[in-house]
Length: 225
Image (cartoon, rainbow, N blue to C red; front, top):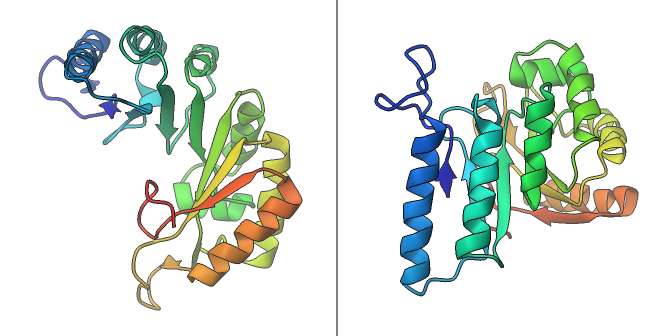
């Protein structure tokens, strides 16, 4: 994993932007990939994440993407380069161009209606339509969604129906489903759905969207069931 969005205290972009400079990210990535390669390690995936800030929000996201792709080609040419973005910022052409560096662009899209989108993200309702519009221009999109119930419910029949409409527009190469870890309390705004609900939605998605659907363990996006 290469953490592009870690909130740094030194070697940051600027005083206002505490993200590490592109040169720092690339140098650390180069050192680690070189170490792994010389140690005889094998890598199926090289993944870019953002622990504090989404990697697409980094002001030098394209530069980082281009350099990491070159490092992958040099040290692990067979590895897939993967971006994980939970809050994709796709309004800038530079950002959308940078996504071409990746074999898979894992993007979070888990709302079928503007009401639910606003409740989940705190963003303007119009941003949902813009997100879907931008995602249609991105190649090799993997859509990730965490289904929940409660005050914020994105697993209701009407919500899922609208969500599937948006998925048809995006045409993802894969859909990853998960839910929250633990059942939660009735007072919680979001609570987990059951495994049977996840499996049912996965089956419906396979029939309706016609793409690969994988269900992941609650609270984890990296461990398939």
